[in-house]
Image (cartoon, rainbow, N blue to C red; front, top):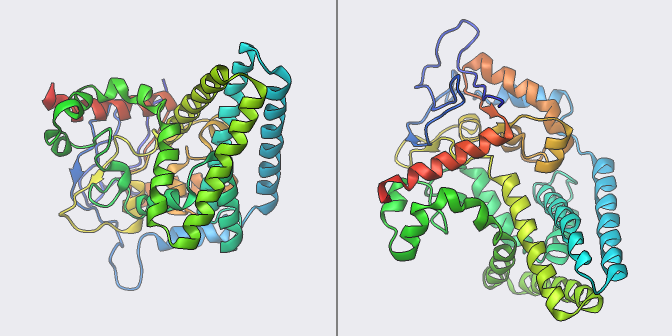
Length: 376
């Protein structure tokens, strides 16, 4: 199994001036994430600059923040053709249980659609705000029934303070919890859920596809009037379009089963793409000093090793460190930026965590298991 690698020394071999992070050792194990004191790089907080500035300059110098409009145009067109092909297949197969097999490629294409919506929200596709929003509305609200305004609101807060227990909605209390302090407050069924959350994580992802739609509709109450109308109409159109397709191709019973399987596979695939990124990584101390941008993004993120297939399966999110440092960087440039970021982190003594896909899941599940330990 691939092991995680972490850069922890500067060129002279001296240890970073701050405490070493919980990181994988030679057997690939690492303790569950805990709140840690703020770290400060060699120049963080220095007058007139920060330890992120030289890296930003190097990345800009290589044109890695330049948009790849053609690459995205081809991806959007290919994804649309794929969706049309599967929809045609559903109509042609019609009233047979064999149609259920098409839920697999459709779930995969829905996940590609979500990745495109994610990239549009980060202005990776175009610098035009209006165009980015239209792409997000089409891919999120219309094609997925997922409110892009809800997603962007939540995701921007996550990017600003990843793994911060008070500021990152992704580590707030929900079906799962991420600290033993959160776990201690659980009662009743929620307490049982926390006790077994590591075992239940992947099964719970099967519900995520439906949960995303529900959260999107709930968010309409928080949107301004006109935005809420546009978002709501597009999400309603999503439900009407797919329901019409399923119900014209097969009886109600088969259509319901198809929709449930589709959403389960979609939630599982999407969750498996996001799960390796931060779970089990460091969590800033809410009462400690505020970290600089480099520390805040690198120490809380984990990269996943792999080649073209991994990039495709995870939608480029396997380069989570680079994505968090440069959110507007086009997806195909993340792989190119990785050597620059990894080497820079090595030079300044900044830990850089990278592991295999299976190991990333193991680390995240170990953290969830440890959080629920006191309840067992």
